[in-house]
Image 1 (tube, rainbow, N blue to C red):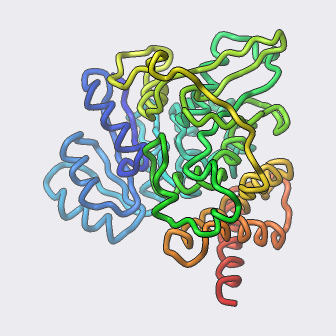
Image 2: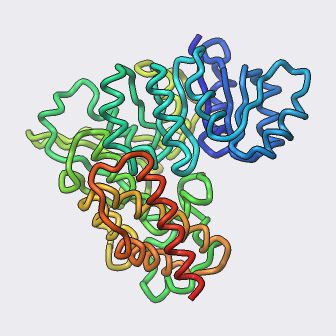
Length: 383
Protein backbone atom coordinates (compact mmCIF):
# COMPACT_ATOMS: atom_id res chain seq x y z
CA UNK A 1 0.00 0.00 0.00
CA UNK A 2 1.53 3.31 -1.12
CA UNK A 3 0.57 6.23 1.10
CA UNK A 4 0.07 9.53 -0.69
CA UNK A 5 -0.49 13.20 0.09
CA UNK A 6 -2.38 15.20 -2.55
CA UNK A 7 -1.49 18.89 -2.45
CA UNK A 8 -4.10 20.80 -4.43
CA UNK A 9 -6.65 18.01 -4.39
CA UNK A 10 -9.53 20.16 -5.68
CA UNK A 11 -7.79 21.27 -8.88
CA UNK A 12 -7.61 19.50 -12.23
CA UNK A 13 -4.55 17.33 -11.44
CA UNK A 14 -5.68 16.71 -7.87
CA UNK A 15 -9.14 15.46 -8.82
CA UNK A 16 -7.69 13.23 -11.53
CA UNK A 17 -5.20 11.84 -9.01
CA UNK A 18 -8.10 10.87 -6.76
CA UNK A 19 -9.84 9.20 -9.70
CA UNK A 20 -6.76 6.99 -10.03
CA UNK A 21 -6.90 6.24 -6.29
CA UNK A 22 -10.52 5.10 -6.73
CA UNK A 23 -9.35 2.57 -9.31
CA UNK A 24 -6.50 1.31 -7.09
CA UNK A 25 -7.89 1.32 -3.55
CA UNK A 26 -5.90 -1.79 -2.65
CA UNK A 27 -2.62 -0.11 -3.67
CA UNK A 28 -3.02 3.60 -2.87
CA UNK A 29 -4.08 5.23 0.38
CA UNK A 30 -4.66 8.97 0.82
CA UNK A 31 -3.08 10.28 4.03
CA UNK A 32 -3.62 14.04 3.53
CA UNK A 33 -5.45 16.46 1.25
CA UNK A 34 -4.84 20.17 0.79
CA UNK A 35 -6.50 23.00 -1.10
CA UNK A 36 -6.72 26.76 -1.14
CA UNK A 37 -10.37 27.53 -0.43
CA UNK A 38 -12.67 24.94 -2.10
CA UNK A 39 -14.57 23.94 1.03
CA UNK A 40 -17.41 21.79 -0.30
CA UNK A 41 -15.26 19.73 -2.67
CA UNK A 42 -12.50 18.96 -0.20
CA UNK A 43 -15.06 17.99 2.44
CA UNK A 44 -16.60 15.59 -0.06
CA UNK A 45 -13.13 14.19 -0.85
CA UNK A 46 -12.26 13.87 2.82
CA UNK A 47 -15.43 11.92 3.60
CA UNK A 48 -14.72 9.56 0.71
CA UNK A 49 -10.96 8.98 1.17
CA UNK A 50 -10.72 9.41 4.96
CA UNK A 51 -7.30 11.09 5.20
CA UNK A 52 -5.70 11.75 8.56
CA UNK A 53 -5.29 15.41 7.72
CA UNK A 54 -6.82 18.20 5.62
CA UNK A 55 -5.04 21.54 5.21
CA UNK A 56 -6.53 24.71 3.72
CA UNK A 57 -4.37 27.67 2.78
CA UNK A 58 -7.25 30.04 3.48
CA UNK A 59 -7.95 30.28 7.20
CA UNK A 60 -11.67 31.03 6.84
CA UNK A 61 -11.98 28.01 4.54
CA UNK A 62 -10.19 25.88 7.14
CA UNK A 63 -12.71 26.92 9.79
CA UNK A 64 -15.59 26.00 7.48
CA UNK A 65 -14.01 22.62 6.67
CA UNK A 66 -13.41 21.96 10.37
CA UNK A 67 -17.07 22.62 11.14
CA UNK A 68 -18.26 20.31 8.37
CA UNK A 69 -15.88 17.52 9.42
CA UNK A 70 -16.60 17.77 13.13
CA UNK A 71 -16.56 14.33 14.72
CA UNK A 72 -14.91 12.67 11.70
CA UNK A 73 -11.46 12.18 13.31
CA UNK A 74 -9.78 14.19 10.52
CA UNK A 75 -7.33 16.87 11.62
CA UNK A 76 -7.89 20.24 9.89
CA UNK A 77 -5.03 22.74 9.60
CA UNK A 78 -4.66 26.14 7.94
CA UNK A 79 -2.20 28.49 6.28
CA UNK A 80 1.33 27.76 5.11
CA UNK A 81 2.11 25.94 8.35
CA UNK A 82 -0.78 23.58 7.64
CA UNK A 83 0.36 22.95 4.07
CA UNK A 84 3.89 22.22 5.26
CA UNK A 85 2.60 19.88 7.98
CA UNK A 86 0.61 17.92 5.39
CA UNK A 87 3.53 17.74 2.96
CA UNK A 88 5.97 16.56 5.61
CA UNK A 89 3.68 14.24 7.60
CA UNK A 90 5.49 11.15 8.79
CA UNK A 91 3.03 8.58 7.48
CA UNK A 92 3.48 9.18 3.72
CA UNK A 93 5.51 7.78 0.83
CA UNK A 94 4.87 10.19 -2.04
CA UNK A 95 3.52 13.75 -2.26
CA UNK A 96 1.62 14.87 -5.35
CA UNK A 97 2.35 18.59 -5.61
CA UNK A 98 -0.57 19.83 -7.73
CA UNK A 99 -0.99 23.31 -6.28
CA UNK A 100 -0.96 26.24 -8.69
CA UNK A 101 1.49 29.06 -8.00
CA UNK A 102 4.55 29.72 -5.87
CA UNK A 103 2.63 28.62 -2.81
CA UNK A 104 3.86 25.14 -3.72
CA UNK A 105 7.57 25.82 -3.21
CA UNK A 106 7.86 25.68 0.60
CA UNK A 107 5.65 22.57 1.04
CA UNK A 108 7.63 20.77 -1.68
CA UNK A 109 10.90 21.56 0.08
CA UNK A 110 9.40 20.32 3.36
CA UNK A 111 8.26 17.09 1.72
CA UNK A 112 11.72 16.44 0.27
CA UNK A 113 13.40 17.09 3.64
CA UNK A 114 10.92 14.66 5.22
CA UNK A 115 12.20 11.97 2.83
CA UNK A 116 9.10 11.76 0.64
CA UNK A 117 9.21 11.13 -3.08
CA UNK A 118 7.65 13.86 -5.20
CA UNK A 119 5.15 13.56 -8.06
CA UNK A 120 5.66 17.07 -9.40
CA UNK A 121 2.82 18.94 -11.06
CA UNK A 122 3.58 22.41 -9.69
CA UNK A 123 5.52 24.33 -12.35
CA UNK A 124 6.73 27.10 -10.08
CA UNK A 125 8.72 24.66 -7.95
CA UNK A 126 11.30 24.19 -10.70
CA UNK A 127 10.75 27.34 -12.77
CA UNK A 128 11.52 29.55 -9.77
CA UNK A 129 13.48 27.29 -7.43
CA UNK A 130 14.96 24.53 -9.57
CA UNK A 131 18.48 25.55 -8.48
CA UNK A 132 17.39 24.80 -4.90
CA UNK A 133 15.12 21.80 -5.48
CA UNK A 134 17.31 19.57 -7.67
CA UNK A 135 20.38 19.59 -5.36
CA UNK A 136 18.03 19.00 -2.39
CA UNK A 137 16.48 15.98 -4.15
CA UNK A 138 19.95 14.49 -4.54
CA UNK A 139 21.02 15.39 -1.01
CA UNK A 140 17.94 13.80 0.58
CA UNK A 141 18.02 10.71 -1.65
CA UNK A 142 14.39 10.96 -2.76
CA UNK A 143 12.86 10.51 -6.22
CA UNK A 144 11.19 13.18 -8.33
CA UNK A 145 8.66 11.99 -10.92
CA UNK A 146 7.40 14.63 -13.37
CA UNK A 147 3.63 14.71 -13.84
CA UNK A 148 3.52 17.26 -16.67
CA UNK A 149 2.74 15.19 -19.77
CA UNK A 150 5.75 16.50 -21.71
CA UNK A 151 8.26 16.00 -18.92
CA UNK A 152 6.84 12.59 -18.13
CA UNK A 153 7.30 11.72 -21.81
CA UNK A 154 10.93 12.83 -21.70
CA UNK A 155 11.46 10.90 -18.45
CA UNK A 156 10.05 7.79 -20.12
CA UNK A 157 12.12 8.32 -23.28
CA UNK A 158 15.29 8.53 -21.16
CA UNK A 159 14.49 5.39 -19.19
CA UNK A 160 17.29 2.85 -19.45
CA UNK A 161 19.43 5.07 -21.69
CA UNK A 162 22.78 6.73 -21.05
CA UNK A 163 21.96 10.39 -20.45
CA UNK A 164 25.41 11.36 -21.71
CA UNK A 165 24.30 10.19 -25.16
CA UNK A 166 21.48 12.75 -25.39
CA UNK A 167 21.85 15.17 -28.30
CA UNK A 168 18.64 17.17 -27.84
CA UNK A 169 15.27 17.10 -26.16
CA UNK A 170 12.21 17.55 -28.37
CA UNK A 171 9.44 19.27 -26.40
CA UNK A 172 6.10 19.12 -28.19
CA UNK A 173 3.31 21.69 -28.03
CA UNK A 174 -0.27 21.47 -29.26
CA UNK A 175 -0.15 25.10 -30.38
CA UNK A 176 -3.31 25.85 -28.40
CA UNK A 177 -6.59 27.18 -29.79
CA UNK A 178 -5.00 30.11 -31.64
CA UNK A 179 -2.27 28.29 -33.55
CA UNK A 180 -3.49 29.48 -36.97
CA UNK A 181 -4.66 32.99 -36.02
CA UNK A 182 -2.85 36.05 -37.29
CA UNK A 183 -1.38 38.69 -35.00
CA UNK A 184 -4.31 40.96 -35.90
CA UNK A 185 -6.87 38.27 -35.05
CA UNK A 186 -5.22 37.67 -31.67
CA UNK A 187 -6.02 41.27 -30.71
CA UNK A 188 -9.71 40.43 -30.45
CA UNK A 189 -9.84 36.94 -28.88
CA UNK A 190 -11.72 36.57 -25.60
CA UNK A 191 -11.12 34.58 -22.44
CA UNK A 192 -13.93 32.24 -23.49
CA UNK A 193 -12.12 31.64 -26.80
CA UNK A 194 -8.81 31.01 -25.05
CA UNK A 195 -10.33 28.50 -22.63
CA UNK A 196 -11.42 26.19 -25.48
CA UNK A 197 -8.33 24.02 -25.71
CA UNK A 198 -8.51 21.64 -28.69
CA UNK A 199 -6.96 18.60 -26.95
CA UNK A 200 -6.43 18.88 -23.21
CA UNK A 201 -8.73 19.29 -20.20
CA UNK A 202 -6.86 21.58 -17.81
CA UNK A 203 -7.45 24.35 -15.30
CA UNK A 204 -8.17 27.89 -16.51
CA UNK A 205 -4.72 29.38 -15.84
CA UNK A 206 -2.79 26.59 -17.58
CA UNK A 207 -5.24 26.65 -20.50
CA UNK A 208 -4.57 30.36 -21.04
CA UNK A 209 -0.83 29.69 -20.77
CA UNK A 210 -1.21 27.10 -23.50
CA UNK A 211 -3.02 29.62 -25.69
CA UNK A 212 -0.18 32.16 -25.30
CA UNK A 213 2.54 29.43 -25.57
CA UNK A 214 3.85 30.75 -22.24
CA UNK A 215 3.24 27.25 -20.89
CA UNK A 216 5.78 25.87 -23.33
CA UNK A 217 8.35 28.44 -22.26
CA UNK A 218 7.83 27.47 -18.63
CA UNK A 219 8.23 23.81 -19.59
CA UNK A 220 11.57 24.62 -21.23
CA UNK A 221 12.72 26.12 -17.92
CA UNK A 222 11.54 23.03 -16.02
CA UNK A 223 13.22 20.67 -18.48
CA UNK A 224 16.56 22.42 -18.00
CA UNK A 225 16.47 21.60 -14.28
CA UNK A 226 14.88 18.16 -14.54
CA UNK A 227 17.23 16.78 -17.15
CA UNK A 228 20.38 18.85 -16.68
CA UNK A 229 20.36 20.45 -20.13
CA UNK A 230 20.65 23.99 -21.47
CA UNK A 231 17.96 26.04 -23.20
CA UNK A 232 19.64 25.50 -26.56
CA UNK A 233 19.56 21.72 -26.08
CA UNK A 234 15.75 21.81 -26.20
CA UNK A 235 13.76 22.14 -29.42
CA UNK A 236 10.09 23.07 -29.18
CA UNK A 237 7.95 21.50 -31.92
CA UNK A 238 4.27 22.31 -32.46
CA UNK A 239 2.38 19.04 -32.92
CA UNK A 240 -1.37 19.82 -33.13
CA UNK A 241 -2.56 16.22 -32.70
CA UNK A 242 -0.89 15.88 -29.24
CA UNK A 243 -0.08 12.20 -29.80
CA UNK A 244 3.70 12.50 -29.40
CA UNK A 245 4.00 14.01 -25.93
CA UNK A 246 7.75 14.67 -26.25
CA UNK A 247 10.89 12.86 -27.36
CA UNK A 248 14.64 12.54 -26.93
CA UNK A 249 17.14 12.43 -29.77
CA UNK A 250 20.43 10.66 -29.11
CA UNK A 251 23.82 11.31 -30.66
CA UNK A 252 23.50 8.33 -33.00
CA UNK A 253 20.43 10.00 -34.55
CA UNK A 254 17.85 7.74 -32.90
CA UNK A 255 14.71 9.43 -31.55
CA UNK A 256 12.76 7.78 -28.74
CA UNK A 257 9.31 9.29 -28.19
CA UNK A 258 6.44 8.60 -25.81
CA UNK A 259 3.06 8.54 -27.53
CA UNK A 260 -0.54 8.18 -26.43
CA UNK A 261 -3.91 9.88 -26.35
CA UNK A 262 -3.96 13.26 -24.58
CA UNK A 263 -4.99 12.24 -21.06
CA UNK A 264 -3.33 13.58 -17.91
CA UNK A 265 -4.18 10.42 -15.99
CA UNK A 266 -1.38 8.59 -17.79
CA UNK A 267 1.52 10.71 -16.44
CA UNK A 268 -0.14 10.95 -13.02
CA UNK A 269 -0.50 7.18 -12.75
CA UNK A 270 3.00 6.60 -14.12
CA UNK A 271 4.44 8.83 -11.39
CA UNK A 272 2.47 7.05 -8.66
CA UNK A 273 3.33 3.51 -9.77
CA UNK A 274 6.78 3.88 -11.38
CA UNK A 275 8.27 1.65 -12.71
CA UNK A 276 5.07 -0.41 -13.06
CA UNK A 277 2.31 0.28 -15.60
CA UNK A 278 -1.05 -0.86 -14.27
CA UNK A 279 -4.10 -0.86 -16.52
CA UNK A 280 -5.53 2.58 -17.30
CA UNK A 281 -8.95 2.99 -18.86
CA UNK A 282 -8.06 5.68 -21.38
CA UNK A 283 -8.64 6.15 -25.09
CA UNK A 284 -6.16 4.18 -27.21
CA UNK A 285 -4.46 5.69 -30.25
CA UNK A 286 -5.86 4.28 -33.49
CA UNK A 287 -3.25 4.97 -36.17
CA UNK A 288 -5.65 4.06 -38.96
CA UNK A 289 -8.10 6.74 -37.82
CA UNK A 290 -5.31 9.19 -37.03
CA UNK A 291 -3.80 8.70 -40.50
CA UNK A 292 -1.21 11.47 -40.16
CA UNK A 293 0.68 13.65 -37.68
CA UNK A 294 1.96 17.13 -38.46
CA UNK A 295 4.72 19.31 -37.06
CA UNK A 296 5.44 23.04 -37.16
CA UNK A 297 7.88 25.53 -35.70
CA UNK A 298 6.49 27.85 -33.01
CA UNK A 299 6.13 31.50 -34.05
CA UNK A 300 7.68 33.76 -31.36
CA UNK A 301 6.68 36.89 -33.28
CA UNK A 302 2.97 36.07 -32.88
CA UNK A 303 3.33 34.53 -29.43
CA UNK A 304 5.64 36.97 -27.69
CA UNK A 305 5.10 35.35 -24.30
CA UNK A 306 7.01 32.32 -25.58
CA UNK A 307 9.84 34.56 -26.81
CA UNK A 308 10.12 36.33 -23.44
CA UNK A 309 10.05 32.99 -21.62
CA UNK A 310 13.14 31.86 -23.50
CA UNK A 311 14.81 35.20 -22.71
CA UNK A 312 14.05 34.65 -19.02
CA UNK A 313 15.34 31.07 -19.18
CA UNK A 314 18.62 32.21 -20.71
CA UNK A 315 19.00 35.03 -18.17
CA UNK A 316 18.47 32.62 -15.27
CA UNK A 317 18.73 33.71 -11.66
CA UNK A 318 15.62 35.56 -10.53
CA UNK A 319 14.34 36.24 -14.05
CA UNK A 320 12.28 33.03 -14.45
CA UNK A 321 10.50 33.97 -11.21
CA UNK A 322 9.86 37.49 -12.48
CA UNK A 323 8.53 36.11 -15.77
CA UNK A 324 6.29 33.57 -14.06
CA UNK A 325 4.90 36.02 -11.50
CA UNK A 326 4.20 38.67 -14.14
CA UNK A 327 2.45 36.11 -16.32
CA UNK A 328 0.33 34.86 -13.43
CA UNK A 329 -0.87 38.39 -12.63
CA UNK A 330 -1.45 39.23 -16.31
CA UNK A 331 -3.47 36.06 -16.93
CA UNK A 332 -5.67 36.86 -13.93
CA UNK A 333 -6.33 40.31 -15.39
CA UNK A 334 -7.17 38.81 -18.77
CA UNK A 335 -9.60 36.32 -17.24
CA UNK A 336 -11.32 39.22 -15.49
CA UNK A 337 -11.63 41.08 -18.81
CA UNK A 338 -9.37 43.95 -17.73
CA UNK A 339 -6.75 43.50 -20.47
CA UNK A 340 -6.60 42.04 -23.97
CA UNK A 341 -5.04 38.68 -24.80
CA UNK A 342 -2.09 40.39 -26.50
CA UNK A 343 -1.53 42.61 -23.44
CA UNK A 344 -0.39 39.59 -21.41
CA UNK A 345 3.01 39.47 -23.13
CA UNK A 346 3.36 43.26 -23.00
CA UNK A 347 2.91 43.32 -19.24
CA UNK A 348 5.40 40.47 -18.81
CA UNK A 349 8.02 42.38 -20.80
CA UNK A 350 7.51 45.59 -18.82
CA UNK A 351 7.93 43.74 -15.51
CA UNK A 352 11.05 41.94 -16.73
CA UNK A 353 12.59 45.24 -17.87
CA UNK A 354 11.81 46.88 -14.51
CA UNK A 355 13.19 44.08 -12.32
CA UNK A 356 16.64 43.77 -10.78
CA UNK A 357 18.66 40.65 -11.53
CA UNK A 358 19.66 38.30 -8.72
CA UNK A 359 21.83 35.22 -9.20
CA UNK A 360 20.98 32.08 -7.18
CA UNK A 361 18.04 33.63 -5.30
CA UNK A 362 16.92 32.23 -1.95
CA UNK A 363 13.31 31.20 -1.35
CA UNK A 364 12.71 34.50 0.44
CA UNK A 365 14.12 36.42 -2.53
CA UNK A 366 11.94 34.37 -4.89
CA UNK A 367 8.79 35.18 -2.92
CA UNK A 368 9.82 38.85 -2.66
CA UNK A 369 10.31 38.98 -6.45
CA UNK A 370 6.80 37.56 -6.89
CA UNK A 371 5.36 40.36 -4.75
CA UNK A 372 7.44 42.98 -6.52
CA UNK A 373 6.18 41.80 -9.92
CA UNK A 374 2.61 42.11 -8.69
CA UNK A 375 3.33 45.62 -7.40
CA UNK A 376 4.79 46.67 -10.76
CA UNK A 377 1.70 45.41 -12.61
CA UNK A 378 -0.61 47.11 -10.12
CA UNK A 379 1.24 50.35 -10.76
CA UNK A 380 0.98 49.93 -14.52
CA UNK A 381 -2.76 49.24 -14.29
CA UNK A 382 -3.31 52.37 -12.19
CA UNK A 383 -1.88 54.61 -14.89
